[in-house]
Image 1 (cartoon, rainbow, N blue to C red):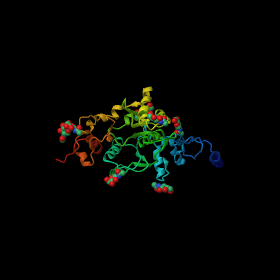
Image 2: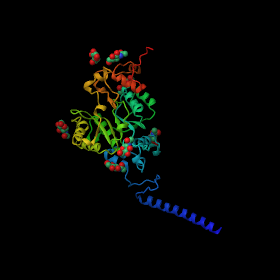
Image 3: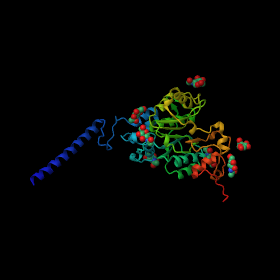
Image 4: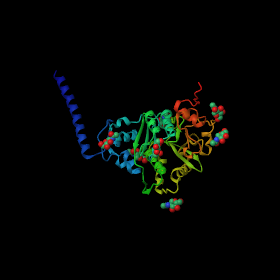
Length: 357
Ligand SMILES: *[C@@H]1O[C@H](CO)[C@@H](O)[C@H](O)[C@H]1NC(C)=O
Ligand SMILES: *[C@@H]1O[C@H](CO)[C@@H](O)[C@H](O)[C@H]1NC(C)=O
Ligand SMILES: *[C@@H]1O[C@H](CO)[C@@H](O)[C@H](O)[C@H]1NC(C)=O
Ligand SMILES: *[C@@H]1O[C@H](CO)[C@@H](O)[C@H](O)[C@H]1NC(C)=O
Ligand SMILES: *[C@@H]1O[C@H](CO)[C@@H](O)[C@H](O)[C@H]1NC(C)=O
Ligand SMILES: *[C@@H]1O[C@H](CO)[C@@H](O)[C@H](O)[C@H]1NC(C)=O
Ligand SMILES: *[C@@H]1O[C@H](CO)[C@@H](O)[C@H](O)[C@H]1NC(C)=O
């Protein structure tokens, strides 16, 4: 009996000691803001001098200074979708655990994002392109990042049809390395780099449509495509892990930004970087940017283009030579490659849908 009581007392003592030791540690840590060692893997308290993903981010994007530091700085930040935390913060939801990226074996997180600045009406083309992200790539979340939400019925329909679509508010950057950013397109070039450096993922232009899942290329550290050697490296599609050194070099090149040289920082410099080191990138030029703008008839006036083995197709909507479909019933009877692509996305079946039956 006595031995048993001693035994109980000893165990109690041991538990008490461990508890007190933990308390003392906790007080020490809180008091001195020391770095933690999270041996037990549990979520702990916050530390001012702990390296934080937002510090890297602030170095490339001053607007990140205004972000709520506590949302981004914990030991799970590196394994989390930072855009998810940013979005939840704007929704006043503080549950960063829901933003953990699944360990799915790929380097590039399966998130897709778009960048948009200024008030404009979304068209059926934008709707189809973003719908293709949902239907073809099936990402964890789709983000549209911009200063104001797009307008119009196609944006409203998109919000209804794509339940994991999230709009994140962000100012349009006016300067880069102290130099005035004149063009909206350049602001968009810069923001996509900032976000890819901080978070990784798949960036798409709103007139670039998914045709096939990107999963076979999601394990390359970075994938881009050359439009042609005179135009340079496209930046309408970028699939990358975070902290890419290639993108960091592109970003640092903005120190010499000059708005007059329209494509110097985006298309030209990245092409030069690739020329210096062909191993720096995985290229999918033909599977991202064909047909080219010089072969628009293949997209808008015939059906012979073999799009099925491509990852994505650029719709080159700014050329405005051919009319774009404006309604779903236009799409149903559009006998062109574009019609096939839109039906492929909408119905999973590219055949014409004429109401002859
Ligand atoms: C900061 O960026 C560097 C490379 O640019 C990376 O190695 C490091 O892990 C990043 N640190 C954090 C906390 O994100
Ligand atoms: C979040 O909280 C801020 C400040 O209280 C408020 O201005 C904002 O409207 C809230 N956002 C949402 C989505 O509820
Ligand atoms: C991706 O690459 C890593 C490291 O080489 C490897 O362990 C992993 O199995 C690859 N994942 C897929 C899905 O191929
Ligand atoms: C958007 O479309 C609406 C209705 O078609 C039109 O009244 C409005 O002027 C358009 N807005 C812009 C910014 O183009
Ligand atoms: C920007 O480039 C243009 C054309 O190349 C040149 O005339 C101008 O001096 C440059 N501006 C600066 C600030 O370097
Ligand atoms: C489309 O192709 C047809 C013949 O295939 C041709 O007659 C027509 O001019 C083309 N349309 C345009 C706008 O290029
Ligand atoms: C669609 O266009 C192709 C040529 O691109 C033509 O061969 C075919 O007959 C057309 N189909 C219909 C239903 O008009």
